[in-house]
Amino acid sequence: MSEKYLLALDAGTGSVRAVLFNLEGEQIGCAQKEWRHNEDPRYPGSMDFDWNANWDLALHCIRKVIADSRIAPSSIAAISTTCMREGIVLYDTEGAEIWACANVDARSADEVGELKLMDSELEREIYSTSGQTYALGALPRILWVKNKLPEVYRKTAHVSMFNDWLIYRMTGILASEPSNGCTTGIFNLQRREWDTSIAERVGLKADIFPPVIECGELAGKVTAACAGATGLAEGTPVVMGGGDAQMGCIGVGVTSPAQAAVFGGSFWQYEFNTATGATDPGCRVRVNCHGIPGIWQFEAIAFKPGLAMRWFRDAFCQDDIMRAKAAGKDPYELMDEEAAKIPVGSYGMMCAFSDVMNYISWRHAAPTFTNFDFDPEKFTKYTFYRSIMENAALVTKGHLELVREATGSVPAEIVFAGGAAKSPLWCQMLADVLGLTVKVPVVKEATALGTAILAGYGAGIYTDISGTARRLVRWEREYVPDRPNHAAYEMMYAKWREIYAAQLALSDRRVTRYMWSAPGL
Image (cartoon, rainbow, N blue to C red; front, top):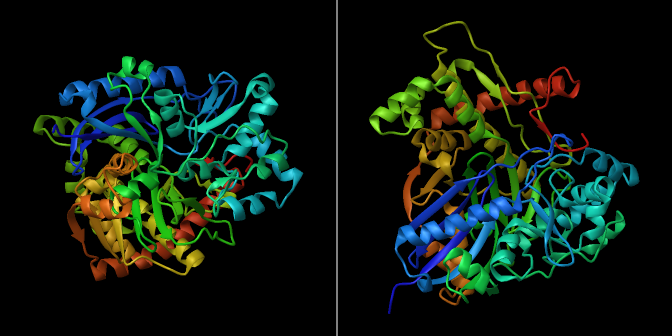
């Protein structure tokens, strides 16, 4: 019998990937294409999604991973999908895409204002049911289409998320699943089902929401048309996947209540599993359905730590980039070596980028470095670089405390994955700041692995999602907190919160620009 494989399609914020795994969770191949979501100049804050061009990129990735891996398409036992969350696609009655926006689209400020004038308590009521506010949800975005593009709204017959859209393109079946569908804010967390009464309350169509199929259940099979375009075998099972963070948790074995993970990429997510769909009375932190039935997640998001690192590298570290290229290394590796020489606390310097999450009033101060001296021996570019790393860890501590206040619980340890987990310096720093053991898996890009596990479960290859995840995850290293460093970071954290509050007040008074603010704030 020939070896079987599982294929994960991952529609991320910055790229689309096709990742192939064997049944033991080992990555066999990966093909990736970057994509961009452009702002429509007519609508400030918009983030359009080009479904035709981006589907072509997905097709390329599927064809390439099959060709590069030199496998028979028929050996792919099942496929599943994951994506950046919050992005939505609207379809007409014929099933053709007619409008789409990506995850942090912020064009709907007018509509958020309209919703708040309509009922000042509605957002909190929606949050108590759905775990979502207006900040990233679909409600104001669909209302924006109704107000600004009435012809598009009139034609709208269906709505879906991007992972659903990928499945629709492959199978012709349009359905949704709870882990990403819940991010619309038009969802009942407890029932893991659409709550159309929320749409009705604000005057939106209530008949545009597709059937919900649970994560890990069979959605359909690859059509002849898709097979011809991709090289996949017609009839290959396609399984409902889920949101990127939820799939990432499966990929690192964070599948039970009271477990937690941090995913460090362009944005950082702190995920804490619970056994109930209860929400935060203060509406400060997001609550989502996990990709495993019967599990929910408190999620706190740090904005742009990875993007800040990339900006700093490209703007100030061209010599490191050149040295790394000559040595065949990653520039961040060389930058980390220098940053490790800087003492804990970066000589007292701090920076403000992302704030600790406040979902009901979500905004971030203008990016700032502060409390440094004109001492070229101490305050080199690597001091600034280390400060950015420490800032991300301090925000994560804030999120740990925020979720503790909401749930009364903290995890016994943290699983750290994503691109940032490739940095031993950052891993140890996170352990020191949080005062918890940090475990790093061998597979850092766990989202695709979690998606592949669901594919195998839906195809009947695996009998249990959680058990399979625990069996397949392999650990690279554990980082134990250094107690003196933890004590130093505890003092630094209190000062950082005070500094951030002052910087946010400047942005609130419009003296400085917000790094980002939710629509309508």
